[in-house]
Amino acid sequence: MMLGTDVSDLSTTAANAAAQGLSIVVPLYNEAAGLPFLHQRLGALAKTLRQRYGLGCEVVYVDDGSADKTLDIARGLGAEGLDVQVVSLSRNFGKEAALMAGLDYARLGAVLFMDGDGQHPPALVEQLVNHWIEGGFDVVYTAKAHRDNESRMRRIAVHGFYALINWGARQKIPADAGDFRLLSPRAAVALRQLPERNRFFKGLASWIGFRQIRVDYEPAARAHGVTSFSPGQLIGLSIEGLTSFSVAPLRLASLLGVVLATVAFLFGLSILWETWMSGKSVPGYPSLVVGLMTIGGVQLIMIGIVGEYIGKILSELKARPIYFVAEHSVKRGEQEAGTGASIGQRTAAE
Ligand code: UDP
Ligand code: MG
Image: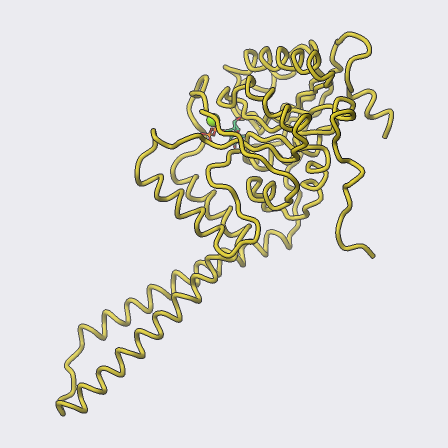
């Protein structure tokens, strides 16, 4: 029995890339206001890619239980120049689940993840595709060029997060990498094979390896509306990412335990020494209470950390589906004959 997975037959060469095609996955949560414009830009992008590389494109819109008219608008979008799939989830499952659904439904070879709020510039996609086709890279990820416009506190928090998650890791997760990322066909297949339910895409996309390259970019301002992630949710997501990806917090807990125990031991020795030398017992209710509270607090925090991991194990064990699709439609692109791959060709070949 083979315990690994061989995806070598899916390697991309400049010659076979065009035939594999590109699926663009766009998660949508209340993005009705900007969707028509985004779709128009993606149509133009598909045209450019077809002309330049002969690359066929499809877009997979994943409606993540939007409360506005996102789904209605997505259903009505025309398929000029690219195939359009609309996958509607049964409720709001969160961005990671929406990305997973998109990855599952993507039918062409390479997969590109892109936000639906216009922050990920379609113009940059050409460069990403170029790294894949001409450069032979498998994971082309983008990262914020700088964080100048963010507060000092936030920068420190981000720095601490990556330091912790990468602590002792063989494959480091690049700091600042976003979800705007292109996966070659073999990288996409590799990512689909990972069985866990608690997904942390940034981490997993880095973990699979292959040839990776970073592209710095300046995220555009949100085209409309406001971000759907509050600071509280971001902290939640960070804990989620940390615990589903790394055991660093557990190691930190053990380390802290060792440090505290050592300090306590040395303190005990010093008390003994003092009593022995001066003959008086050390008065010490305050220090006793402080010591007790420190140990108590640290223990509670550590139990909390262990609890997070037990929660993860429980949710993996329950093995519930990551999402439910309530509705799915496919519109075949109206494009000139003989250009690139389209969904029809792929499904016929399968
Ligand atoms: N999104 C989603 N489900 C959610 C929240 C967000 O599919 O529960 C989508 C959203 O429509 C957008 C992308 O994820 O396309 C990024 O969301 P947002 O712009 O709010 O996040 P930010 O850019 O601030 O990180
Ligand atoms: Mg955004």
